[in-house]
Length: 396
Image (cartoon, rainbow, N blue to C red; front, side, top):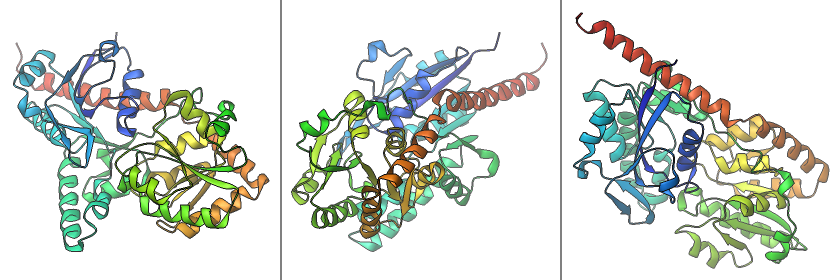
């Protein structure tokens, strides 16, 4: 029988469908092998915590002033945390974010000489222009600070898992070596997303019977490149009477988008069957964000048979180019986005070809194998450390 491996997970958010980070952690939980015994320390727990199959401890937290739904955990303010960890006695520690939770995980693993892992989810350095770009000297200073913080957080783990080649290159530039980096891509459940979920009732519901739908799905926050989305809307609204932009998602940027994009359709945040139907019923997917380490929504769109036009940056570029299911265009160039949207909408054969490629690619992105590779890696790390500890201990 394989030795059980106890893993302490530190994640600020563990609410399914909150964002790509939380969805990834839930996939790990859903695919947890029998020999792994996890415990989760979080700021935002699952909505139905009683039915979550593993132990979850909620930590004190504060909410971000510009995004109150997001919580930042405060592990130092949980007096019982060291006692809980001591009783659990983990073999390995994992963190999800370069936050106070991540710092605690790093310090705990270092103090107890435990293997440490993380998944590189969020490219924080690329956020600086969206929050400090109005004052370039401050943006430069904050970008430099983000680089230093990222370097400190991500050079510490024994293994940092990356979702894409561009993110691997970034971490190598930070100072990690090849041996510290492993791939953890993202999967898709084609039983939940696929062309079979097309529902023309969606068009009727939103008054789009006579229009082609250009879809954008995301949290509505500035770092998703809202400026380019607005400029793309202006071009499409001016140049075509047969197209409507549909925005699915919610967030602090929504009021400004609604004010600017009068003819766009805003569905709010959607999940499960409704989201799958929106994807499968639309005609083209657009995603101008340049801050993504992966881009789960891009893979969801491709799985649904929806050709994608994305910024040539980060994870989305890698997905679209690997799948040959759309186009990666110059970042922040709304004209380039619009031209590719036009070419897809006006050429049914091209759209069908891109759609077929995207579906075929998505079917190969299986969560079972992706999670198995992750757990094989962490098991090897924990087992290796345990063997070293035994060999170094004095004989009885």
